[in-house]
Image 1 (cartoon, rainbow, N blue to C red):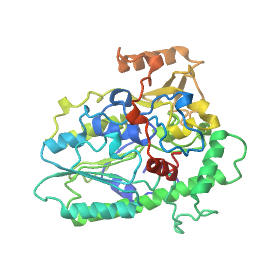
Image 2 (image 1 turned 120 degrees about the vertical axis):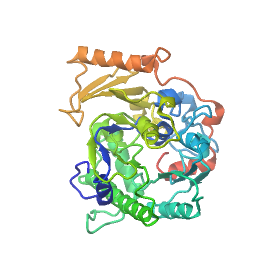
Image 3 (image 1 turned 120 degrees about the horizontal axis):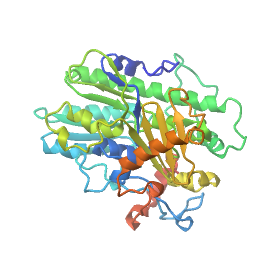
Image 4 (image 1 turned 30 degrees about the vertical axis):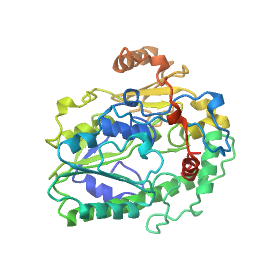
Length: 422
Protein backbone atom coordinates (compact mmCIF):
# COMPACT_ATOMS: atom_id res chain seq x y z
CA UNK A 1 0.00 0.00 0.00
CA UNK A 2 3.06 2.26 0.16
CA UNK A 3 4.18 1.27 -3.34
CA UNK A 4 6.71 -1.51 -2.81
CA UNK A 5 7.34 -3.69 -5.88
CA UNK A 6 7.01 -7.01 -4.01
CA UNK A 7 3.72 -8.27 -2.65
CA UNK A 8 5.01 -8.57 0.91
CA UNK A 9 1.95 -7.21 2.77
CA UNK A 10 -1.38 -8.36 1.26
CA UNK A 11 -3.19 -8.44 4.64
CA UNK A 12 -2.12 -4.91 5.58
CA UNK A 13 -2.94 -3.76 2.03
CA UNK A 14 -6.48 -5.10 2.38
CA UNK A 15 -6.73 -3.42 5.76
CA UNK A 16 -5.59 -0.10 4.24
CA UNK A 17 -8.40 -0.34 1.67
CA UNK A 18 -10.86 0.38 4.49
CA UNK A 19 -8.66 2.59 6.68
CA UNK A 20 -6.75 5.86 6.59
CA UNK A 21 -3.20 5.59 5.26
CA UNK A 22 -0.86 8.34 6.43
CA UNK A 23 1.59 8.74 3.59
CA UNK A 24 4.02 11.07 5.41
CA UNK A 25 4.54 9.41 8.82
CA UNK A 26 7.76 9.44 10.82
CA UNK A 27 9.04 7.97 14.03
CA UNK A 28 10.44 10.20 16.75
CA UNK A 29 13.63 8.14 17.02
CA UNK A 30 15.16 5.28 15.01
CA UNK A 31 14.93 2.67 17.77
CA UNK A 32 12.54 1.05 20.21
CA UNK A 33 12.77 2.73 23.62
CA UNK A 34 12.32 6.42 22.72
CA UNK A 35 9.83 5.71 19.93
CA UNK A 36 7.57 3.63 22.21
CA UNK A 37 7.81 6.27 24.93
CA UNK A 38 6.64 8.82 22.35
CA UNK A 39 3.72 6.61 21.26
CA UNK A 40 2.63 6.20 24.88
CA UNK A 41 3.08 9.82 26.04
CA UNK A 42 2.67 12.04 22.96
CA UNK A 43 6.06 13.60 23.74
CA UNK A 44 9.30 13.81 21.79
CA UNK A 45 12.44 12.20 23.26
CA UNK A 46 13.92 15.57 24.27
CA UNK A 47 10.73 16.01 26.33
CA UNK A 48 10.29 12.55 27.91
CA UNK A 49 13.99 11.71 28.30
CA UNK A 50 13.72 7.97 27.53
CA UNK A 51 16.70 7.73 25.20
CA UNK A 52 20.44 7.17 24.99
CA UNK A 53 22.99 9.35 26.74
CA UNK A 54 26.70 10.03 26.40
CA UNK A 55 29.22 7.72 28.07
CA UNK A 56 32.91 8.56 28.50
CA UNK A 57 35.45 6.19 27.00
CA UNK A 58 36.26 4.91 30.49
CA UNK A 59 32.61 3.92 30.97
CA UNK A 60 32.33 1.93 27.74
CA UNK A 61 32.91 -1.83 27.75
CA UNK A 62 35.24 -3.45 25.25
CA UNK A 63 33.93 -4.97 22.04
CA UNK A 64 34.12 -8.40 23.70
CA UNK A 65 31.60 -7.92 26.50
CA UNK A 66 32.23 -10.39 29.30
CA UNK A 67 31.96 -8.32 32.49
CA UNK A 68 29.43 -9.42 35.10
CA UNK A 69 27.84 -5.98 35.11
CA UNK A 70 28.52 -3.43 32.39
CA UNK A 71 27.51 0.14 31.84
CA UNK A 72 24.61 0.96 29.58
CA UNK A 73 23.61 4.29 28.08
CA UNK A 74 19.81 4.01 27.89
CA UNK A 75 17.41 5.69 30.31
CA UNK A 76 13.79 4.63 30.78
CA UNK A 77 10.55 6.59 31.01
CA UNK A 78 10.13 8.33 34.36
CA UNK A 79 7.11 7.75 36.61
CA UNK A 80 6.21 11.43 36.37
CA UNK A 81 5.03 11.01 32.77
CA UNK A 82 1.45 9.89 32.19
CA UNK A 83 1.00 7.21 29.55
CA UNK A 84 -1.90 6.43 27.25
CA UNK A 85 -2.52 3.21 29.18
CA UNK A 86 -2.67 5.10 32.48
CA UNK A 87 -5.15 7.62 31.08
CA UNK A 88 -7.42 4.91 29.65
CA UNK A 89 -7.14 2.79 32.78
CA UNK A 90 -8.36 5.68 34.91
CA UNK A 91 -11.40 5.87 32.60
CA UNK A 92 -12.37 2.24 33.17
CA UNK A 93 -10.55 0.53 30.33
CA UNK A 94 -8.86 -2.83 30.67
CA UNK A 95 -5.27 -2.31 29.51
CA UNK A 96 -3.03 -5.05 28.20
CA UNK A 97 0.28 -5.27 26.35
CA UNK A 98 1.50 -8.46 24.63
CA UNK A 99 5.06 -7.97 23.41
CA UNK A 100 8.09 -9.73 21.96
CA UNK A 101 10.91 -7.22 22.60
CA UNK A 102 12.40 -8.55 25.82
CA UNK A 103 15.12 -5.89 25.92
CA UNK A 104 13.83 -2.34 25.66
CA UNK A 105 10.22 -3.07 26.62
CA UNK A 106 11.10 -4.69 29.93
CA UNK A 107 9.74 -3.08 33.07
CA UNK A 108 13.06 -1.49 34.04
CA UNK A 109 12.49 1.04 31.25
CA UNK A 110 9.11 2.20 32.58
CA UNK A 111 6.93 1.51 29.52
CA UNK A 112 4.68 -0.82 31.54
CA UNK A 113 3.07 2.15 33.30
CA UNK A 114 -0.72 1.82 33.24
CA UNK A 115 -0.97 -1.72 31.88
CA UNK A 116 -3.01 -4.18 33.97
CA UNK A 117 -1.47 -7.02 31.96
CA UNK A 118 2.12 -6.76 30.75
CA UNK A 119 2.90 -9.99 28.89
CA UNK A 120 6.51 -9.90 27.72
CA UNK A 121 8.11 -12.93 26.09
CA UNK A 122 10.24 -13.36 22.97
CA UNK A 123 8.59 -15.30 20.15
CA UNK A 124 7.45 -15.16 16.53
CA UNK A 125 4.20 -13.44 15.55
CA UNK A 126 2.30 -16.74 15.63
CA UNK A 127 3.17 -17.17 19.32
CA UNK A 128 2.42 -13.52 20.09
CA UNK A 129 -0.99 -13.92 18.44
CA UNK A 130 -1.81 -16.97 20.53
CA UNK A 131 -1.10 -15.00 23.70
CA UNK A 132 -3.31 -12.20 22.35
CA UNK A 133 -6.14 -14.64 21.62
CA UNK A 134 -5.84 -16.10 25.11
CA UNK A 135 -6.11 -12.64 26.65
CA UNK A 136 -9.10 -11.72 24.50
CA UNK A 137 -10.85 -14.93 25.53
CA UNK A 138 -10.35 -14.27 29.24
CA UNK A 139 -10.98 -10.53 29.33
CA UNK A 140 -13.81 -8.82 31.22
CA UNK A 141 -16.44 -8.46 28.50
CA UNK A 142 -18.36 -5.80 30.40
CA UNK A 143 -15.56 -3.23 29.97
CA UNK A 144 -13.85 -1.64 26.96
CA UNK A 145 -10.22 -2.52 26.41
CA UNK A 146 -6.96 -1.06 25.15
CA UNK A 147 -4.62 -3.70 23.72
CA UNK A 148 -1.06 -2.99 22.57
CA UNK A 149 0.79 -5.65 20.54
CA UNK A 150 4.52 -5.60 19.74
CA UNK A 151 5.94 -7.98 17.12
CA UNK A 152 9.65 -8.59 16.43
CA UNK A 153 9.65 -10.67 13.23
CA UNK A 154 11.17 -7.84 11.19
CA UNK A 155 13.82 -7.16 13.82
CA UNK A 156 17.17 -8.91 13.51
CA UNK A 157 17.49 -11.85 13.56
CA UNK A 158 14.73 -11.82 10.94
CA UNK A 159 11.90 -14.33 10.77
CA UNK A 160 12.91 -15.11 7.20
CA UNK A 161 10.95 -18.28 6.51
CA UNK A 162 11.21 -19.07 2.76
CA UNK A 163 8.00 -18.45 0.83
CA UNK A 164 8.07 -20.03 -2.66
CA UNK A 165 5.03 -17.93 -3.62
CA UNK A 166 7.07 -14.75 -2.95
CA UNK A 167 10.80 -15.53 -3.05
CA UNK A 168 13.42 -18.05 -1.99
CA UNK A 169 16.78 -16.42 -1.15
CA UNK A 170 19.97 -17.81 -2.64
CA UNK A 171 21.28 -18.47 0.89
CA UNK A 172 19.15 -19.60 3.87
CA UNK A 173 18.80 -17.09 6.67
CA UNK A 174 21.65 -17.07 9.16
CA UNK A 175 21.77 -14.67 12.11
CA UNK A 176 25.58 -14.90 12.10
CA UNK A 177 25.80 -14.04 8.40
CA UNK A 178 23.24 -11.28 8.88
CA UNK A 179 25.45 -9.70 11.53
CA UNK A 180 28.57 -10.05 9.38
CA UNK A 181 26.92 -8.32 6.43
CA UNK A 182 25.70 -5.53 8.68
CA UNK A 183 29.14 -5.03 10.21
CA UNK A 184 30.73 -4.87 6.76
CA UNK A 185 28.28 -2.16 5.69
CA UNK A 186 29.01 -0.12 8.80
CA UNK A 187 32.79 -0.48 8.46
CA UNK A 188 32.60 0.35 4.72
CA UNK A 189 35.70 -1.79 4.30
CA UNK A 190 35.00 -3.22 0.86
CA UNK A 191 34.42 -6.72 2.22
CA UNK A 192 30.74 -6.85 1.26
CA UNK A 193 30.43 -9.67 -1.26
CA UNK A 194 28.35 -9.45 -4.46
CA UNK A 195 24.70 -10.15 -3.79
CA UNK A 196 24.94 -9.93 0.01
CA UNK A 197 23.11 -6.63 0.32
CA UNK A 198 20.25 -7.99 -1.80
CA UNK A 199 20.29 -11.14 0.32
CA UNK A 200 19.77 -9.02 3.44
CA UNK A 201 16.84 -7.23 1.74
CA UNK A 202 15.34 -10.57 0.67
CA UNK A 203 15.44 -11.85 4.25
CA UNK A 204 13.79 -8.66 5.47
CA UNK A 205 11.05 -8.94 2.84
CA UNK A 206 10.37 -12.50 3.94
CA UNK A 207 10.12 -11.30 7.53
CA UNK A 208 7.57 -8.67 6.50
CA UNK A 209 5.56 -11.32 4.66
CA UNK A 210 5.64 -13.66 7.66
CA UNK A 211 4.49 -10.89 9.96
CA UNK A 212 1.81 -9.73 7.53
CA UNK A 213 0.34 -13.23 7.42
CA UNK A 214 -0.06 -13.22 11.20
CA UNK A 215 -1.49 -9.69 11.26
CA UNK A 216 -4.08 -10.97 8.79
CA UNK A 217 -4.77 -13.85 11.17
CA UNK A 218 -5.23 -11.37 14.02
CA UNK A 219 -7.75 -9.37 11.98
CA UNK A 220 -9.69 -12.51 11.11
CA UNK A 221 -9.93 -13.48 14.77
CA UNK A 222 -11.16 -10.01 15.68
CA UNK A 223 -13.85 -10.35 13.01
CA UNK A 224 -14.89 -13.78 14.29
CA UNK A 225 -15.17 -12.32 17.80
CA UNK A 226 -17.28 -9.44 16.43
CA UNK A 227 -14.67 -6.93 17.60
CA UNK A 228 -13.19 -5.66 14.34
CA UNK A 229 -15.82 -3.25 13.02
CA UNK A 230 -16.28 -1.24 16.23
CA UNK A 231 -12.58 -1.11 17.09
CA UNK A 232 -10.08 1.66 16.55
CA UNK A 233 -7.10 -0.21 15.08
CA UNK A 234 -3.71 1.42 14.54
CA UNK A 235 -0.98 -0.36 12.56
CA UNK A 236 2.38 1.36 12.95
CA UNK A 237 6.09 0.64 13.20
CA UNK A 238 8.36 2.07 15.87
CA UNK A 239 11.16 2.51 13.33
CA UNK A 240 12.48 1.30 9.99
CA UNK A 241 15.70 -0.39 8.87
CA UNK A 242 18.83 0.64 6.95
CA UNK A 243 20.19 -1.44 4.06
CA UNK A 244 23.38 0.31 3.04
CA UNK A 245 22.11 3.88 2.79
CA UNK A 246 24.86 6.25 4.02
CA UNK A 247 26.83 3.10 4.91
CA UNK A 248 24.30 2.23 7.60
CA UNK A 249 22.79 -1.10 8.56
CA UNK A 250 20.06 -2.09 11.01
CA UNK A 251 18.58 0.86 12.85
CA UNK A 252 19.34 3.45 15.56
CA UNK A 253 22.57 5.26 14.57
CA UNK A 254 21.12 8.16 12.57
CA UNK A 255 18.04 10.08 11.40
CA UNK A 256 17.96 9.24 7.70
CA UNK A 257 14.73 8.06 6.09
CA UNK A 258 15.52 4.34 6.02
CA UNK A 259 14.89 4.18 9.77
CA UNK A 260 12.75 7.31 10.25
CA UNK A 261 9.92 6.87 7.73
CA UNK A 262 7.30 4.44 9.05
CA UNK A 263 3.91 3.09 7.99
CA UNK A 264 0.85 4.37 9.83
CA UNK A 265 -2.58 2.97 8.92
CA UNK A 266 -5.58 3.77 11.11
CA UNK A 267 -9.05 2.19 10.93
CA UNK A 268 -11.60 4.27 12.76
CA UNK A 269 -14.59 2.55 14.40
CA UNK A 270 -17.03 1.44 11.68
CA UNK A 271 -14.83 2.88 8.92
CA UNK A 272 -15.31 0.99 5.65
CA UNK A 273 -13.81 3.28 2.99
CA UNK A 274 -10.12 3.89 2.57
CA UNK A 275 -8.58 7.32 2.32
CA UNK A 276 -5.16 8.93 2.09
CA UNK A 277 -3.85 11.55 4.52
CA UNK A 278 -0.95 13.67 3.25
CA UNK A 279 -0.18 15.89 6.25
CA UNK A 280 3.01 15.07 8.17
CA UNK A 281 2.42 12.99 11.29
CA UNK A 282 4.57 11.38 13.92
CA UNK A 283 4.39 8.77 16.65
CA UNK A 284 3.73 11.64 19.09
CA UNK A 285 0.30 11.88 17.48
CA UNK A 286 -0.80 8.35 18.39
CA UNK A 287 -2.45 9.44 21.70
CA UNK A 288 -4.32 12.15 19.81
CA UNK A 289 -5.55 9.64 17.25
CA UNK A 290 -6.84 7.52 20.13
CA UNK A 291 -8.38 10.53 21.89
CA UNK A 292 -10.32 11.46 18.76
CA UNK A 293 -12.30 8.21 19.01
CA UNK A 294 -12.84 7.68 22.71
CA UNK A 295 -14.66 9.75 25.30
CA UNK A 296 -12.10 8.63 27.88
CA UNK A 297 -9.55 11.25 26.81
CA UNK A 298 -10.03 14.98 26.39
CA UNK A 299 -7.76 16.13 23.55
CA UNK A 300 -7.25 19.48 25.28
CA UNK A 301 -5.37 17.71 28.08
CA UNK A 302 -2.85 16.02 25.79
CA UNK A 303 0.66 17.36 25.08
CA UNK A 304 0.36 20.01 22.38
CA UNK A 305 2.47 18.43 19.66
CA UNK A 306 -0.58 18.33 17.36
CA UNK A 307 -1.38 19.90 15.04
CA UNK A 308 1.87 21.43 13.85
CA UNK A 309 3.15 22.20 10.33
CA UNK A 310 6.26 20.16 11.11
CA UNK A 311 7.40 17.04 13.01
CA UNK A 312 10.71 16.16 14.65
CA UNK A 313 12.97 13.11 14.87
CA UNK A 314 15.98 12.55 17.14
CA UNK A 315 18.96 10.31 17.79
CA UNK A 316 21.47 10.80 20.60
CA UNK A 317 24.92 9.14 20.51
CA UNK A 318 23.33 5.86 19.37
CA UNK A 319 23.06 2.70 21.45
CA UNK A 320 25.81 0.91 23.30
CA UNK A 321 26.51 -1.59 20.50
CA UNK A 322 27.38 1.21 18.10
CA UNK A 323 29.81 2.86 20.52
CA UNK A 324 32.18 -0.05 21.14
CA UNK A 325 33.39 -0.66 17.57
CA UNK A 326 35.99 1.10 15.38
CA UNK A 327 33.25 3.00 13.53
CA UNK A 328 31.92 4.49 16.79
CA UNK A 329 33.28 7.95 15.94
CA UNK A 330 30.42 8.31 13.44
CA UNK A 331 27.80 8.22 16.16
CA UNK A 332 29.26 10.32 18.96
CA UNK A 333 26.87 13.19 18.37
CA UNK A 334 23.25 14.18 18.81
CA UNK A 335 21.10 14.70 15.71
CA UNK A 336 17.63 16.17 15.45
CA UNK A 337 15.62 16.39 12.23
CA UNK A 338 12.82 18.80 11.40
CA UNK A 339 10.33 17.86 8.67
CA UNK A 340 8.24 20.57 7.04
CA UNK A 341 6.42 19.75 3.80
CA UNK A 342 9.16 18.21 1.62
CA UNK A 343 11.98 19.91 3.52
CA UNK A 344 14.14 18.06 6.01
CA UNK A 345 16.74 19.85 8.09
CA UNK A 346 19.16 17.86 10.30
CA UNK A 347 20.93 19.72 13.09
CA UNK A 348 24.01 17.94 14.40
CA UNK A 349 26.01 18.74 17.53
CA UNK A 350 29.24 18.06 15.61
CA UNK A 351 28.41 20.83 13.14
CA UNK A 352 27.67 18.47 10.22
CA UNK A 353 24.23 19.92 9.49
CA UNK A 354 22.22 18.71 6.50
CA UNK A 355 19.29 19.90 4.38
CA UNK A 356 17.30 17.80 1.91
CA UNK A 357 14.39 18.32 -0.44
CA UNK A 358 12.67 14.97 0.02
CA UNK A 359 10.23 15.69 -2.80
CA UNK A 360 13.05 15.76 -5.34
CA UNK A 361 15.64 13.72 -3.43
CA UNK A 362 13.93 10.93 -1.48
CA UNK A 363 17.25 9.08 -1.01
CA UNK A 364 18.91 12.09 0.62
CA UNK A 365 21.80 12.12 -1.83
CA UNK A 366 22.17 15.90 -2.20
CA UNK A 367 22.90 17.90 0.96
CA UNK A 368 21.72 21.49 0.32
CA UNK A 369 22.87 22.98 3.63
CA UNK A 370 25.93 24.67 2.10
CA UNK A 371 24.42 25.73 -1.22
CA UNK A 372 21.20 27.06 0.35
CA UNK A 373 22.32 28.52 3.71
CA UNK A 374 19.35 30.88 4.11
CA UNK A 375 16.90 28.00 3.70
CA UNK A 376 18.83 25.96 6.26
CA UNK A 377 18.99 28.92 8.66
CA UNK A 378 15.24 29.45 8.42
CA UNK A 379 14.54 25.83 9.35
CA UNK A 380 17.14 25.96 12.11
CA UNK A 381 15.30 28.92 13.64
CA UNK A 382 11.99 27.01 13.55
CA UNK A 383 13.69 24.04 15.20
CA UNK A 384 15.23 26.16 17.95
CA UNK A 385 11.86 27.79 18.68
CA UNK A 386 10.11 24.41 18.81
CA UNK A 387 12.60 23.08 21.37
CA UNK A 388 11.98 25.98 23.71
CA UNK A 389 14.28 28.25 25.64
CA UNK A 390 15.21 25.51 28.12
CA UNK A 391 16.89 23.38 25.42
CA UNK A 392 20.14 24.55 23.84
CA UNK A 393 20.20 23.40 20.23
CA UNK A 394 23.93 22.81 20.00
CA UNK A 395 24.01 20.74 23.20
CA UNK A 396 20.75 18.82 22.78
CA UNK A 397 21.12 15.26 23.96
CA UNK A 398 23.13 16.23 27.01
CA UNK A 399 22.41 14.98 30.48
CA UNK A 400 23.55 11.99 32.45
CA UNK A 401 22.47 8.61 33.75
CA UNK A 402 22.32 7.41 37.32
CA UNK A 403 23.97 4.15 38.38
CA UNK A 404 20.68 2.23 38.19
CA UNK A 405 20.35 3.12 34.53
CA UNK A 406 23.92 2.07 33.73
CA UNK A 407 24.00 -1.39 35.28
CA UNK A 408 23.22 -4.50 33.21
CA UNK A 409 23.09 -8.00 34.68
CA UNK A 410 24.75 -11.01 33.02
CA UNK A 411 21.31 -12.23 31.85
CA UNK A 412 20.58 -8.86 30.26
CA UNK A 413 23.97 -8.92 28.52
CA UNK A 414 23.11 -12.37 27.15
CA UNK A 415 19.76 -11.14 25.83
CA UNK A 416 21.38 -8.10 24.24
CA UNK A 417 23.81 -10.38 22.39
CA UNK A 418 21.04 -12.71 21.20
CA UNK A 419 19.16 -9.82 19.58
CA UNK A 420 22.30 -8.25 18.11
CA UNK A 421 22.38 -5.30 20.52
CA UNK A 422 25.95 -6.21 21.57
